[in-house]
Image (cartoon, rainbow, N blue to C red):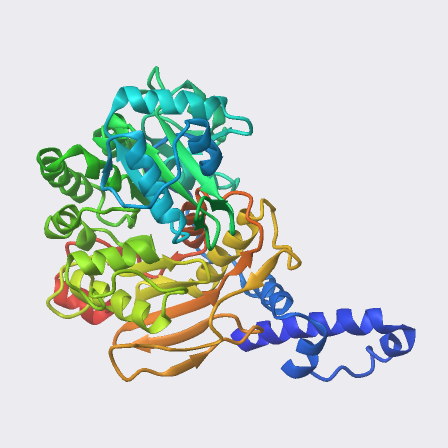
Length: 508
């Protein structure tokens, strides 16, 4: 079925080519059309065209779709502004970059911004001084070209899910008047989540090649910071969980754990225990997706792991920085890497994904964990890694996530092949730590699939927008789209009380 669909995509391209070549050729189409070779088609269509056309043919919704999705618990208003422009307006002098786990001053902000801009990497930090933050926020809101958007992982995921008219979305989080105005009408917000004041996050964007002093951005990205107490304490968590009994979701999406990092050990140690208690109280046959985000405190990440947050969710979404940081915090594979150099090596990524599912997921007969799915995304490609037997339609899901990354980054509703480029490796290894398979990317079947033990990997390239208009929320849109196209193979497979050995034999 997969190859037939790919052949259909090829055929459509070939017909289009023949049609535009002149009447003599088109008259012969009804008599005989040989299936064109890849070489023939690639001479007349770019690789980007082949991938985009194949996506449109191969991406199909699952037979069993979600009806009601509950999303929580971080929400805010994003103020998006030019990072270099704002810092110049604040009369901050350019200097060398230096990462800070928590920002205490404008100088800290400048150093952290330069540090990540030079690497073209996304990051998010807490700003400890409320008064200084409010002054910077006012300057950002008044800066020429500043824009206000729905912000916060939960709200952004909810907004994306609400673009599907048959899907009802519940959003719990600190929702102020401006955010409520910006939200899709299809989103239900419990009265307990409404508050008088909005939480604001400042998004400092930079473009590929943009310079400030001696620093130059290798690619477009953004630096996020806030002084956000409501989201920082996950204050909407209890409202979120208590709303589920009435809403009766068939999927739960949780985010906001990263916001607690800047609140200090005493708060997050207590709160993580309460998060675990809250998750375990959610109806057991409902899968839970956890969206991770940028963190810097290895002790905090270890607390998330030690409090067993990952094993009690069904699915997680993360990017290359979050993946490597998780491995570094727990001394996993390739923890000796300080950072990725260029496009993350597929074999190394595959090693870490497999390790997470083995260490914290449903991986063997003794496992009581629920984690069976990881949606990994980086600029050039995406991977969905799933434990066999739990999830269906994952080829379509990973392609759908890549497609929305391509279109949304360019500010479009669909992929425009004249505005994107392929940056994914055409050949790669399935593992770096072990003797892996040598794999390749085929533009007319743009999902490469391999298995390691009981885990299946689906990789698809991203058609990278050459001049992205907005990078904020891309990861959330990718995860949301991937979830929309995902299907549960067995509803009872999640967080079930049945004998673990029987469950493993049935599904793992």
